[in-house]
Length: 368
Image 1 (cartoon, rainbow, N blue to C red):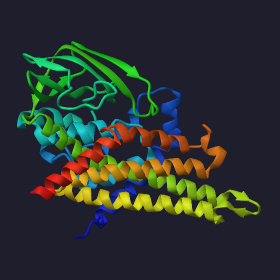
Image 2: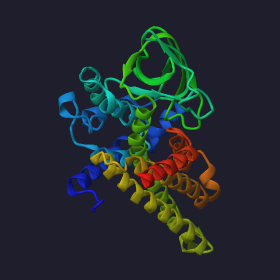
Image 3: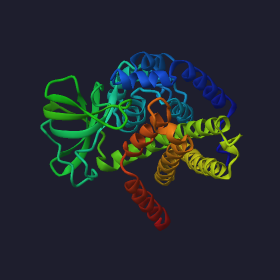
Image 4: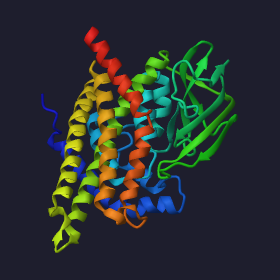
């Protein structure tokens, strides 16, 4: 089985890397931090013009129809560039939810605007610091009206629509809510990575449209699909950390020689490389399972998620250490990657939760 990308996909990767080097350098990320902009609107629109947002959306719904492998390629380059856009919320979660569970009418009505970037979507699941489970969801729907609160919601402050996990009687389901409609209040939430904004959403009798019929199992399928794509973002960020650390170590001299020549630094760089390559292998397995809708997707997604979290956190941390005292300063870019590594580690739930999901998926597979 060949898990390598083909020539067309590598060409897409090279094109995306060149574009992001030009349009999303660290200065753009810093501007989002310093000016307190929620995201770069011009960059987001350019993603839509290039067909990246709709890469995995079929052509009949206004997308590019390229496929999920191509979306994985794009995700890795977005992670490398730290692009300050709501790509993960809209594409990995919003679009995948509609493609997985939407009716034909919902797909025709919502996907075209999403594919061009005209509409931003998000997923509203968490209701505070405790892990969200099927039993503790408090937001409720009654007669098509949603009430409750969700915090934190990634990109909830800028999204046009949200997929809200809520309870209708004794059953948990997914509901589409217009965040610009009546009965919705938003409040910004301060986080470690302002380039991926978070919000508190409060609903009071907001109109809610049902999405799919499977409830919590549907949510887990959507999360599995998103986990693979986010793992590729984490690989891209981790690889950038390794390259940044290597470049600094080659140019930083101590006692008349580059610090890259000292064994302690060599070991740190080698450990970063090993972690990243392990995560890359697991993510390629996840990409195959995602693109073929294989039965192994729950195992592959959880494995990619766990290894991607560990690799990115380790690489971002070691990058700061190799830079020494300079790595802790605002002037260097190390902290930008550390911030993003922490944000991505929690966007779909904690590392512990995904390890538990991996164990359960393996148990189910072995029992079959």
